[in-house]
Length: 155
Image (spheres, rainbow, N blue to C red):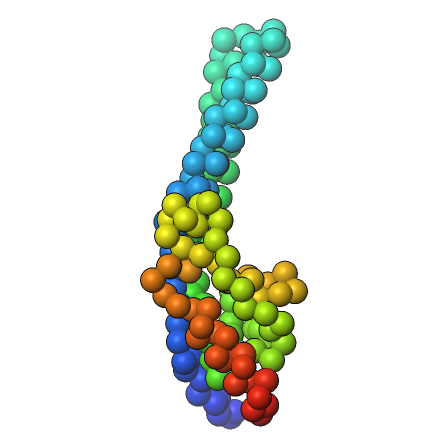
């Protein structure tokens, strides 16, 4: 029988701002769904269908679009529900490990939506980002300290 080693506890767990992701996602999916449904209605009006066939096509497309919108919202919520975990020598983002010594930069940036929701994101170089960080949390300074320590005192 194999004995399992206990999991290393993270030094810090940083939750993401859920509203920053969900509000824009819900708005964009709703608008795109409405545009797509309007296109379907326009196409159905140009096709010679009986009233019953038209009703079935309308209902089917509406159910399909509703399913797509709900799935998009669920996936967005699932993604933003996973916090960033900081360990002694690495961090974990959505099951992906990033070693601190491999981080080339830590740049704090903010988009227009970030300003509206009082969040920011960190550019870690090599197309790696920490997004949806609440503005009151100084994760950039903390992460920079971990990166500097990791580069100066390799394990």
